Image 1 (cartoon, rainbow, N blue to C red):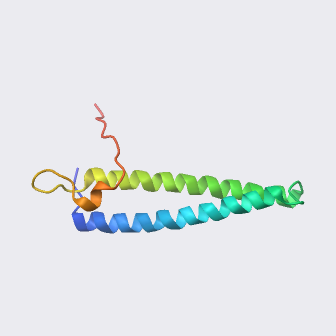
Image 2: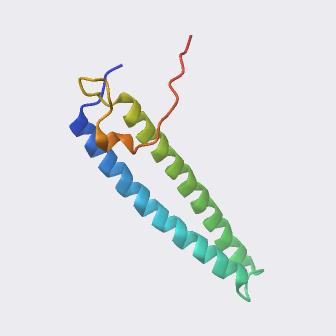
Image 3: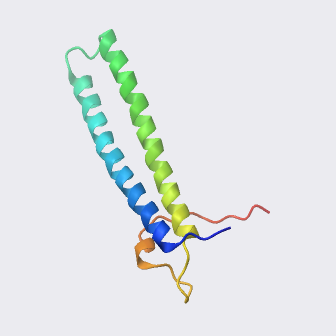
Amino acid sequence: METIDICDADAAMSGMQALHAAMTLELGTIEQRMEALAESRVAQSAAAIEEMSVYYVARAALYSGLAGIKEILGWVHLMTEKNPEGNVFEAIKALPTVPAFFIH
């Protein structure tokens, strides 16, 4: 497999971290709306139940996306080139890691 150049890894990190921050903010907004709707006087109405189902789908999609971002960042950590001593560059150390399993 090809390694990722440190400049490309930095670009990937920046983009994924920005997306992670935006999705985390949106997740907080969705959860606040869910809580407010659940505590409202119309919580049992058909419209509120329909709205809540949309929030559940959005929340699940956001959690899935956040997990995907963590996996991508782990892959970037795994595939980024090492320095001559075989160590990972400082900017990459903070990324999550993924296990490297053998297929055979």
